[in-house]
Length: 190
Image 1: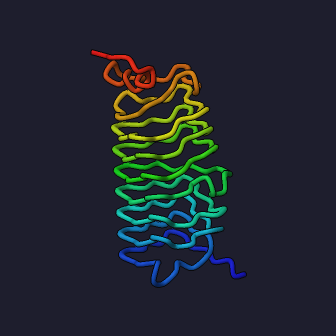
Image 2: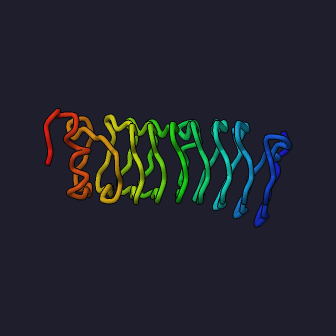
């Protein structure tokens, strides 16, 4: 197999579902308005790349390396991030839609999600220590046996986390968000 290496390159307005992105390693590359929907990106390596206004919906990421990637205003519906190569996995998302995606059993320490829609995302058994959920919509997100040590939910909304099924030590919540910790108890909060 050919091992392509791309560094410091810009890709703009490319539809990779029609003409596949060459398989290989991408370092410090910028992708703007690119279409990766339903693309097979398995075993690619992305290192310190940025993605702006890109569509990754239903892309396949089997053993894909994602190291220090930034996503801005990207559509990433139904992505199985848990299929990625876990070594040095690190993403930062701002203004992205990640609905129906999965981070099952992943180590996501110190990552941040800002102004993102994370509806029905599976965070089961993941390590979300020190993760910031700034102004994120977590409607229907699954937190089950999730490590949430020192995570910040102060501006997050629509989350439902059962404290007895997750580890929440030193996590931060606003007073308005406390109902997300108590709704499962079927009590009235005024």
